[in-house]
Each structure stands twice: as C-alpha cells, then as structure tokens.
Length: 168
Picture 1: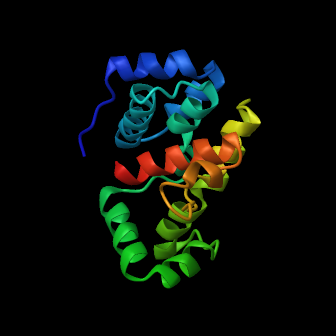
Picture 2: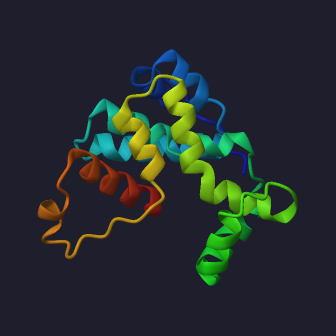
C-alpha cells in the first residue's frame, strides 16, 4: 500500500527502457512499479538478459495506468477471477467502463491497452507482443517437454514472464 520505488529499480528501468518507454513505465502505481522491478530482477538473476523480454517485464502492466485501481478494487478482481471465472471474463470483456464493471474491464483489457501504448512509444514488436499476451495462459503438455513445446523465442519469453508474474 505504501510502496515506494527504490532508486536501484529506477536505474534498472533507465538502463533497459528508452526515454519514451520510461515515461510510460513511471505512470504505473508505485506497487505496480515494484512488482515489475521484481519480475525484471528475477529474470536477470536467472540469466535472462534479452532487452525485449526485460522491457516487457517492466511494462507488462502499463495498460493499467489508463484507469488505475485502488487496493480494494484489485482485491475484488482477484476474488472474482478465482471464484467466478466465467462471470469475471464476461464482465471484463463487456467494455463497460462505467460503474462497478470498470474494474473488471481494466483487469481484462490492460494487456491490449498496454501493448498499444508501448507500440506508440516505440517498443519493439516482440516487447509489444509479450505485453499483449502476458495475461493469457501457456501451459506446456509436461514440464519435462516444455522446451519442445515452446517453438519460438516469443513463446519461450512469454512462458518466463507469465511464470514470474503469477508468482509475484
């Protein structure tokens, strides 16, 4: 609730993002900035240093800045998604930004919004695709076989991003 982005995280973002993308990134709420730092740092620690992947890690939630959610609204979204997934999906795709459904639309549509925003600010196509797809699910047939299931660099990066996003 009172998260303040740390200077080393800001410096990390500055080293990865162009000035235009950094402006977008800094529009996120402090807790979302810290969440993004956590994912980027986890990727770097595990040896993944591709600039497109790291940019996507930092920017994956940037679409939420179009209509920021309060803590209690986020809690409702999480509960609804877990308890009533079909209803959550219906409300989230309704496009109704008025009233109580707004929180579900933001939660469901922020990947597409973020991809548009990142593309307009000059992000690479791979970064844009990762942002757009980060909320979907990719589950390989088996963990042992996942390398053969992930046929493209984008799919491999998406899998890494989703795994860390779900953990934090």
